[in-house]
Image (cartoon, rainbow over the protein chains, first blue to last red):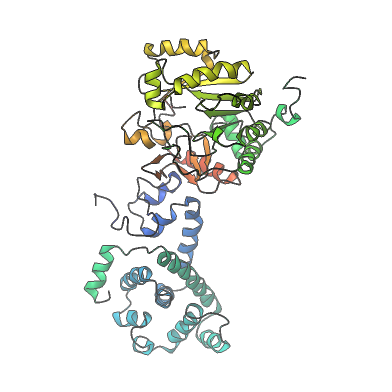
Length: 194
Length: 293
């Protein structure tokens, strides 16, 4: 691997375009170095980069709800969808924003939810996320009613968009076998969360 | 009845296109020509080929319908000319009729290696005797051995045989010479004389450098060129839309994506707008000072 080269070249089902092969219409995404495997895979269809990343940034980034709730939606959805790339990436993000290892394990389904989340309101929200991302078909009324009892409608709308965008990323990363960067795995190893 | 008189009225009526693309073309900001890679396969395997074209190449060809749609939409958007290249376009049996139909929209230059005009095939080519069509045929040296070393056996003989017959059929022929040396070298004078003797005037003899992309890059031939050195002509291929006709190059069997604009080719406004936006975002450069064309 040469200097400045991504850590993951040649390990996926699709080409991950490095800066030298990045389309001229995608160069802005490489201006600050390796943009990561999602961008490097999407760059094969550069006209998708702007709309896709704009949507993902709006759905997963800072919004009207707290980053803590956003990470609930992202990490829980990724665990329900079995996306290793997204679980690894958002375990790291969850540590960054201050989630405890116990909360992370609970969101990843490795310990009972009650062990990580004593709060009834947060469990109600995770119940809504589970109904969206962990099942198909109609969602029972009681799940919605319980979530609404604790959270305003706009929060549930925003987090439902977050769940949907995360499911898209989950399938994108899983389908193309996008690899986790070495430094992320090293961090999770060190935290006992690999 | 002359060929001009028989043409559809649309040919002689200037496009009334308006909008950002038309304005950029009219002001000279955006080149007026749209290039179309009809296909990638070829009956030759030239040493400096940008697309590693050969008889064994994957075809990756556009359909006649796609090429006509590009022509129609190019005119509507305000582009002023078309080019068709490959691969060898004339390996596609429907290509002459398609080019003729495209020429009803905009003037077309059709690039060909000139080796497919033997015998009765010259009659098929005669349908391209149209004021809106020019054939551009490659010839790299006045010395048969030197020419054929790069372009393949018998290429020289085929070309010098075909060109006068095409000219006699009323087809406008341009000759393109690709050289590793200086573009104004006196060593090219005998070739210039030969081209004139074939019935092709000096203004229809294009001399250009080898661009170090594709197979030429593997063999370290030609001039290095950044995007700003390459004319920013919108180029459409089966693989997508590219910045310049030197964009969709291939090396080691893999498409170069560095000059890719969009994978979407139609509607043509998608890649055209991407090209214009990219041009406006790039710093000023040498702007084709290398003589690449």
